[in-house]
Image (cartoon, rainbow, N blue to C red; front, side):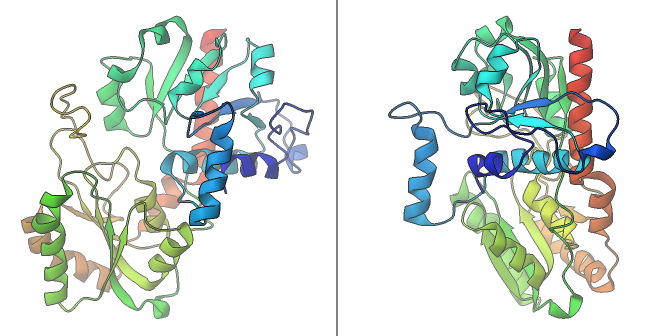
Length: 362
């Protein structure tokens, strides 16, 4: 479901154009405490050929290629809105007409930074989590805006930003733990789901990491299913998790790791490649940014979730221990998720950040 559909489908969001649609969820009558209405803005793409074509291009793509892959940025908006619905917190989505008429209200810009170019923002701003990959990308004119807080998904990312922007805070979006639930054990027919999200230098890591892992699993007699980031639909991933007893997660680093957390919520323990070292996004490293300070592929993770390894050798040495714990049922990944990263907890945290930003502004 894309953002336009999500906006039309829920009465808590004003439809595009700012008509006076209801802002109150059906169950809001039980909420007596007055809360501010959040003004949320999210765009994944800018206009390319003519004004408004950003709305048309996804529809054309869907007609040609079928249902689109839900990006991490879009998932942030959808899950935040779902959590706000559960809490009865009112919000608008992409009501540009309203926000320009009310410069005193907080604008929460979740999506890409080109939204800041569309008109002269006079509002206090809460930016993130899908704005800038690093502060070196931010234009100087950002200093002219009333930026009250910048959100990034995890603590190590906030530490990387903080020397440039002291007003940074870590905020992870919640996961729908009612949707991503454990499947019955007797329906598990595959030992391992290999989740391949290796993004850079693939020609190196395929022979040095991915294939050695696959060969070791096959030699150990384990059955394996492979899924590649960006090449699946959520329904396919959910079905794969229902079939698999464990997951190996391969990614250089993550700011949150929503797919990994969906697996944890589904009760699937994870053996994660957590190589450490510097932040090595090739757009920045080593020529623009050199940062080494707790960089991780699983920033939200503890012993209940599974184990980690650093390279092919440490995978080989640690696999037997991980699998023995899986076989014994020693891990409890869903407990970690329910305790820390539900839709409700994520939405409540976001609202509190927004409320505090406005209190400081006042």
